[in-house]
Length: 322
Image 1 (cartoon, rainbow, N blue to C red):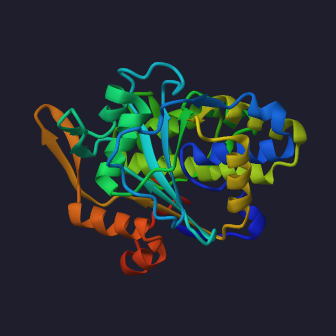
Image 2 (image 1 turned 180 degrees about the horizontal axis):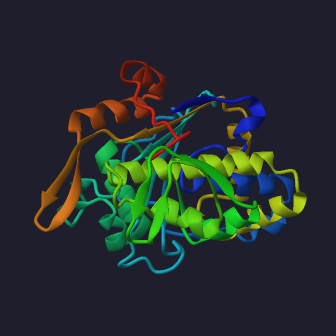
């Protein structure tokens, strides 16, 4: 989905599993730097140190965002990145593109052969995941951010819940929850179940990606509409505690991100082009569309996603989802 916002409407409406939270932290730092900055987790060594990374083009800025059931500042061996998104901030400051990479995408992982892309995080943490994404996209990742899924509960409840729309009735056997068609007001636990479901969704993980984006948009909308300073303070504190960033992200970086996104007027949600599901051994995987991947990320690298959108009309709708 492509949205155009008034200047003030994009304070947190940025769609990625961590960027919306990260931006709220940035706005909080802008207003009350020391109080919130102390709560933001930072890890050194998140960005790869190896030679051979894509060169920086100076055309915009790219953040790799992940969502995980395990805190990203703790040991990650064995953990999986349940949501992976590359967010491109255009060089002119007028566009934010949130590009989901299916976590079951079947890709080469340096040193580990071809496997699911989320396994890169389990094998080597943020640095290996970034190397894998850079190898896939040929786009340099400037910064890394991760969101603990458990933080969804606290953030959602801090705002009094959020609202989403489901298009068709579906049952989630894993969490024993049935979603009726229509509007739903979600508390924190319900929100976590909502973004985790992929069972009985016709497109599996691809539909789950849209649910994740729909939830973050709903969270953004609710935060923007909240005027209660106590709720806002609780939300920003919960967000700050749930986010981990690479060690190069300073409070100034977050304030600059907040200022840039305050001036953004266009927001779009995309999914990396895929061929479809497949089986590799006993694994269910998603095969990526190599030609589509090249076209999309060539546009990202050239900071010409607008042209790509005109040709492909590939944005996801998040106002109502399965």
